Length: 124
Image 1: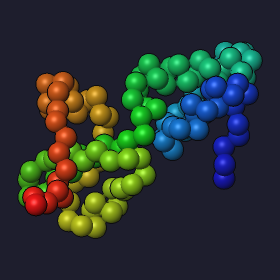
Image 2 (image 1 turned 135 degrees about the horizontal axis):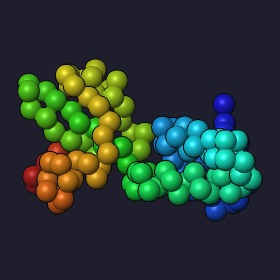
Image 3 (image 1 turned 90 degrees about the horizontal axis):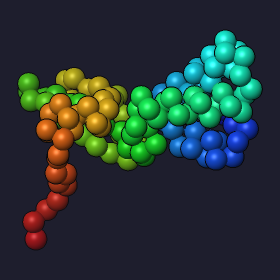
Image 4 (image 1 turned 180 degrees about the vertical axis):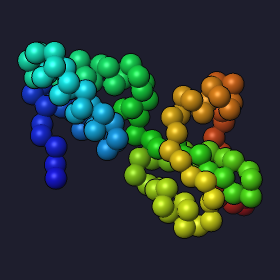
């Protein structure tokens, strides 16, 4: 079922690019601000988006990041949003798969700096 459009077109455009989890967080927060806080819906949506971005700065990036483990070796897979799923990764033999925050991976595992390389690149 499609989500209702946000009142402000700019807020709506940004919210449309959120992941399903981000959209759920946004909707929940907007509802709390509107109903519990007695705030107009348009303002509640804007505040909910700001709150979401404060907590998850990479929420508008169109990427998913997975922590994947195989043979007790953990790696991180970064892909375009929706291109890969945890179920698919498990089906090809990864033992532990979980979605993680990009900033958490960069800071916690790579001291804030990581280089991406193409794992399937072939040398000519």
